[in-house]
Structure formats: structure tokens, C-alpha cells
Image (cartoon, rainbow, N blue to C red):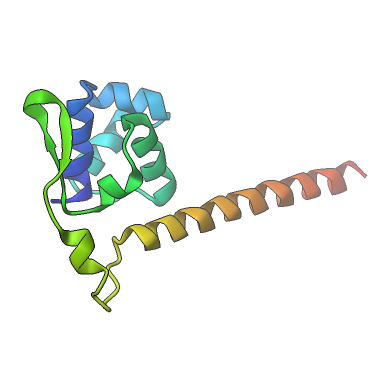
Length: 126
């Protein structure tokens, strides 16, 4: 199951429309639509915002084994993929560890850009 499909299922399980989710994370509805239709893959910062708003762990949006039982709005992990993958020496580009590492790097980059902007601003004032 794709990231877009998982986002859609979790969003629907929360009773949110695409517009609702888009407003809550400050993006256009078309952004949510393109993610859910797998036309675009969200970057890690956007994926983090989506996960937070849907009240799920980012790993649940990334992992293939997570499925949503929409009939009673309960989430369940129906696979043993986590156990199997820990012994797999091949890197999965959608693995939670890589996603978390990318997210941390992007957060650090954002902080550095903010510091750089403040430095440039202070230099221009002089």
C-alpha cells in the first residue's frame, strides 16, 4: 500500500475531508489530493505534519504493514514486516530509520537557514 493510500485511509478514519486536513497543516487541498493519488510524495517535513495532525506515528504512514480498519475506526498492524526487515541487509528507502534521519536533517537545515537569515539581516542593518 502506498503512502498516499495510507494517508487517505488514516484521514478518512479520523473523519476529515481533504480540505480539513489541508487547512490544519496549512497547504492547499490539491496538495493532499496529489499525495493521496500518488502523484506526489510528501517530503519528510510535510509527512511529519500530516502524521501529527492525523495523530499517528510517521512510521505508520511509511510502513507497508499498517492497515486501517475503517469500519470501527481502529488502527492495527497486520504484518510481521518489522521483525523480518530487521534481518534484511538491504536498505529500504521507505524504512522508518531513514525517514527519521532525513526528517532530523531537514529540521537541522531549517534551523541553519533561520540562523543564516538572522545573520544576514544583522549584517545588513550595520
